Image 1 (cartoon, rainbow, N blue to C red):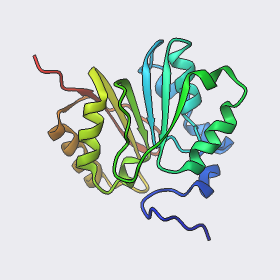
Image 2: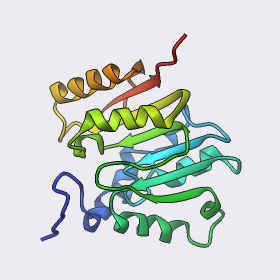
Image 3: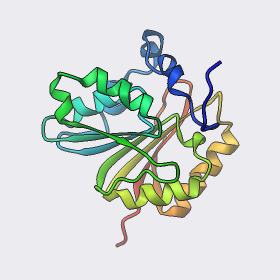
Length: 189
């Protein structure tokens, strides 16, 4: 049995279930992300896990871009470090360990990916406020939640909470086995 001191968080010991050939059949990182991430962007991969999306985000952001791979668990970040070790991606991917109660990044980002992780956060209001303050003007937040863990009612409640924080719905892309929504940061006129 894999024990986890964070009851809401998928333990690092199960990282293989998040990054494997079966998942690649229905969650193709480039296909999901290429419409939203451009060269020279600064991207936050929040709850990056074993880096399933991190690598593609770094490729899409290009040599002038940067990806902050953030996770609560050092074990997940260690897996990303092994993947990028000795490659040119080491220069574009910054590993960041979040604290229990905050993401804790100071740099403003253009794009935030939160794939299958918002439901793991006990204080979503606090999370959205921190994400809002982390985004550059007109930044984008892409949230994807698993249908098998997050019922529609809970997803819509989360959506309303994000809107209350100042995010505006931009679109609802289709992602396999998921509920997804793309938000733009509400820029005052």
